[in-house]
Image 1 (cartoon, rainbow, N blue to C red):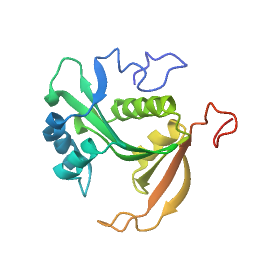
Image 2: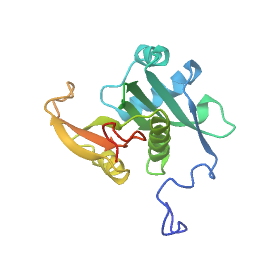
Image 3: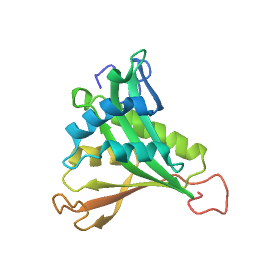
Image 4: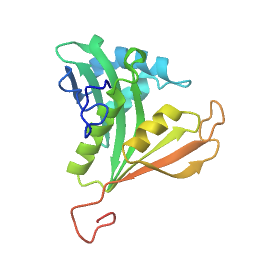
Length: 178
């Protein structure tokens, strides 16, 4: 963000003031979601894959969009699975025209808030070893590299870094509790 930020704010803190909002992904979003997906990944998800996520009770898919706009105003999206006390981020992307403006950070923070409200203890994800901008985002939001998945990406054979954010838990005796 610009130098107008105060010393305690982080990139993305002014997103809601800037007219962006988060909401649940719906089927009508898929044409724009697929455009962003294809612009973002070597092996993009198919429409059917997104439809399956929308129908999966363990899945949460959210979009960031400009307030007052329809699906054409989508800026990014995130899909994650909730299982027991963990959240697995499956897919996160922002539109090329808004990369570096905090959209992915805002989506990530929205997921973290929802995960905390559901009592999740941790969030994990895989990220390409070569995807330094994504790694920097995750690290700046508290994720740590905890492992490597060799040849995880079948399109290139590239390794994935396994990253985890420990959330803790309100229950004293629960794993992840402080």
